[in-house]
Length: 443
Image 1 (cartoon, rainbow, N blue to C red):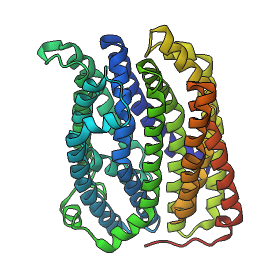
Image 2 (image 1 turned 90 degrees about the horizontal axis):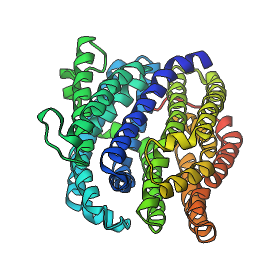
Image 3 (image 1 turned 135 degrees about the horizontal axis):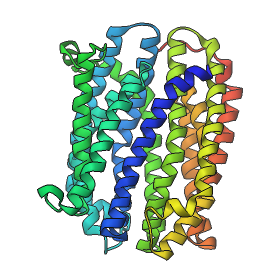
Image 4 (image 1 turned 120 degrees about the horizontal axis):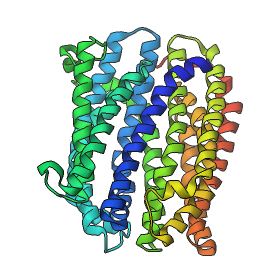
């Protein structure tokens, strides 16, 4: 099983590394070509945007479970029905949330206490991001559909296109190369828009050329009429995950309000640390998603006997791969942070935060594997409830209380504490309840 895991996982991990690399290079360009205030401005809007796309993440996870089970059962038409319904909802959701973001971007930033010296730049950047949501949401959905069928390579190829174009156009728009407009901080958002739009178009063309079962053809177009019964099943599985993601995003907003109290240097440090954490967190998330997909396919094929092997393989790979990445980040922490920040004070703050929090993401990855496999069977309430408790019952209160005792370092102490509590509770539920059940297909 671990060999199958790696075959699927490597392209998925590389996709997440590319995604993080794109954000990293963009942050380096902003910090180096414009200044620390530009990096702080982009960092300020990140939790707000994450909040607005959180429901989409949950919806996609629900459809992935169903597509994985349908793929395991070789039900091709059912896969297209699931995809069509999800695409319709994701497009509508993108229009609604994009419109709200455009209308209230500045108010959202003021709500989280964004420092006055960066709020204008943060507002401009965020509005360009919101404008792309009606296209970005279906793009997210399509990549999750493909992964649900066991195809992690095609989304990876698509992301290569998006990343390459983003890296090319970001400095071009920031500095006005080759006759392009010099638009400063907005250049990073416009470059991301161009990269993702081109990649999504190329993905659809490629699927049509390969005559992939999930190509966007006439059958898929007909299936975009929402199947309300199917949508209820998707929502039942996906909404709890979406709610958890929303509450994680709200927790990040709470954290950024704590961080903003220490000034824009602290906000910039928060942004730099988030870039590095992505390289540890996204592989952990990838392993959890892989475990969920393999679990769904096993249940779809009526092979419950494979679920234990899926979990053991996922947990082992989490600690091996994650452990190597965490060790490298600790060893080269000053050098990596120096890519984003050169000013001494925010650099010192960022280094301290990194040392405190990074190891905890190994626990986060273990948690992702357990909760992912449980969700693949349609069991979502308790894994979600435990995740919410770990964030709002542990992380945010701990960050707030420890902040008053240890300063900004106390904010970051809440993360590993929450990861440890969440993993302990997930293990109890898995061993005492979920493991003892027989799991059947949902469709």
